[in-house]
Length: 279
Figure 1: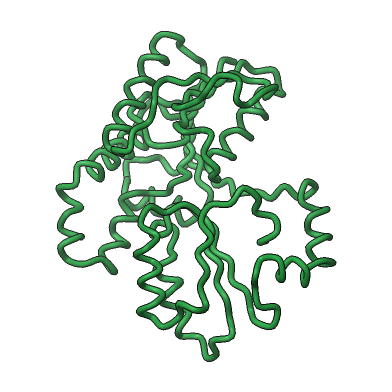
Figure 2 (figure 1 turned 180 degrees about the vertical axis):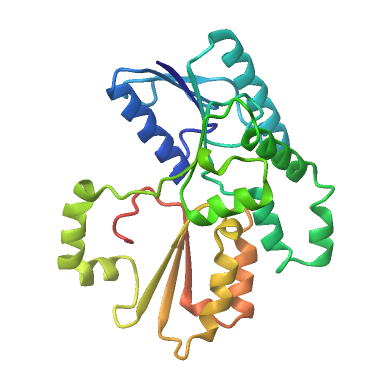
């Protein structure tokens, strides 16, 4: 089959990008003709991957414009090449046969934010053009007659989609939990057990306290704010939290840690190229 994946910024170091590359490689190994449509991809960057990567434009710092441009480029490509399978990995108006809701249900996400955000912020949800576009893309994808299979990575997301979009046929949703590269990580796991004191010292951690690890881009969406609020409720402040990932408003979370009185217990590392030592 001719299979096309839709995923902008494929070179980003995130779980969704990694998952897309894994899926593409898996289908390619089974003899399918696979192409990833993306943005900002210098040809030849990922060599010998067994599938094609087509850059259909450049990204922009304006999220709304970025979504619209990538969507238009994907629709043009699909109309011209007519693939057998269009596998969406992020929100898009482009007709898709398969979609993985790796970013969850945006409608449910906004409802959760209503419980914690200011009334002014909540009021802006209804008029913010970015939220309106994402919700339109989400509904169009979930309720499309072209969609054969909708993949989610948890029963929670499955329940949210069925609750917020009752037109979706529950039988078309498959729950596929995120996996672990067990054999690839076995050596690192064994080394971690054996060399833990040295690793902790190298990373500047306290070996005599409990270590929490938060990994994820976009801290707010991944729940870091709630985690920070929960930590002061511990009976003893004998812990350290290491935060890893990209966040354009990281200073807001640093300020929150300071207001909660746990600033000395939280270390913001940012994005890293090698995660294994932290795990």
